[in-house]
Image 1 (cartoon, rainbow, N blue to C red):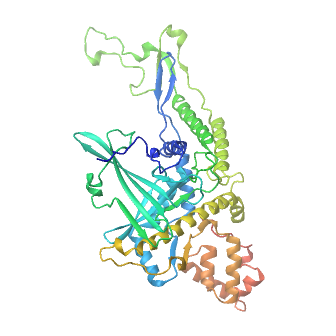
Image 2: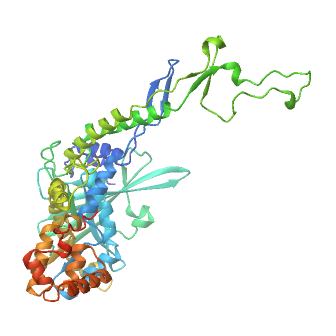
Image 3: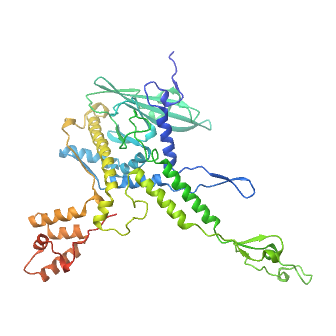
Length: 504
């Protein structure tokens, strides 16, 4: 009889050598990303300890969403050189709704420090499994390239009216030239413990899963990990990336505290008027009759909530306005200060979350002021590009394994290293419009760009408007043409060079 394997934590497995502090850090980042903040506890005027909701702003989510949307969006394209291979790839990506899914997963990856994608075969189709930061465990913590890892998947089922927690650990390891995938299922009645190892057949969804799979001929791991750019200054030898919160927690806390206090002051600052208590009480009945019609009416509308009863000498109390001024300017300045600190901390240009320091900006100023965001985006794109190319190679590596398909035939028979992978990220707002205008002008002069297309691209015109412009130009300058205008640097109506649309 073999020894039953038991794990208190996934990190207790001897094959995983990551420090627990890395995953505690990820838990904190997840809490901020969910905007899961504790209640505010304070003592009221009577000295009693009370609680209220913490009115925070989820700047972690806002920042991650902003970065993800300018790094990768649904307009991005991924292609490989060979036509038949590219058709196969497009089918896989479309079947997994890749572009929409990737932008969403990238958002959480930026917030938490990283994420992974793992291709697998299901019903003769290649599917993609998305692995969150807290599910991914590198087997070695002293390397920049992660080629061995454990992936954890958790499932909660009800047994005998009680929740039971199952954890599937999927180990990806190299044994010389053999790529080995080991699947282990653990059962626990506690959410804080991994539990004891049980057969894969314990859960219906894992009945067809083999305990071990050995694949020959692979050169790349069957997962692709995205690591946020920059050094991990929390754990120097860790291959995991850092999320938004890790080096901006103090700024985020300051923003949240400022916003919470301002909202609370607004709530307390509503108009309040102190009046003698007797003014808010029904008047005495008169005439000896006990009917509402014989009751003296209230002095104030009973729906009003601005009056506060004060007890004492009615003449001394009188009617006093207790409303306090809301310190709007002070809080706005404080919030603006902390938001600017946050923008600097996460590498976004000033004006991303605050008012631009220069007010309304020209197109050239937008490009200049976006330099910080552009540099940050470029750093993230380097890591995204690395992950995507690793993923494409993993998809084709998997397609080479005929034993994973019901007919035993591989879906790809070429050389992985010969794949020419082309990724177009659709730069959008980060296109330098001045440079674009100059380049398009030269293209028109060379006769390789239609004049109508030039007008539509650089002046944000639709096709009908562009046709109208061309017609007006031909009438105003019958001896010249658009090419001569572009060459001489002259523009219609004697205007300066128009500023193209700045984008979002």
